Image (cartoon, rainbow, N blue to C red; front, side, top):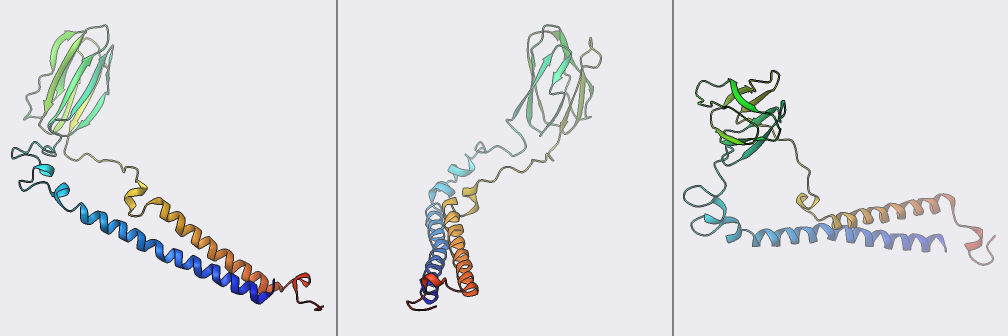
Length: 213
């Protein structure tokens, strides 16, 4: 192949790759625009009374955002509470479940001033006990017959949540279109590399014109 023929072919490959790369964002935009337009109707906003998204008139749709309805379980084992330390939002119900063979109780040793929590003073080895914590503050409790068997509860609105894993489909463009963009870039890059090689080192004597030495 002559140098001029190779350059023309490489230019065609480069032009095609650029066209594919330029068309990719357009397809992505069309998909996003079409879907968003359709989801702005009744599915997102609910009916005229707003019941689909916001719940009923009594606010029973999504809760009050303060942990109401949430439940945490603490196992009461032989000489341990699991988890020993617990952080919850106001309105969360904590359920203690006895799982051991020895009698234990729950005796509060630290309670906020406005709280009426009295724990479970009776010694039992089987069963459950629950209490809903509405008052913010620090709570501490122990088992009377077993020194060192302690537990704590912190009730606060300021619970920090760690970052979750991002879904690639939530970034705006499906992952398949990223592959098209990468392939287009590689095609352009390879075309330039071969063009540079031919221009720098010239043609092979075996592929030149007949009679050329």
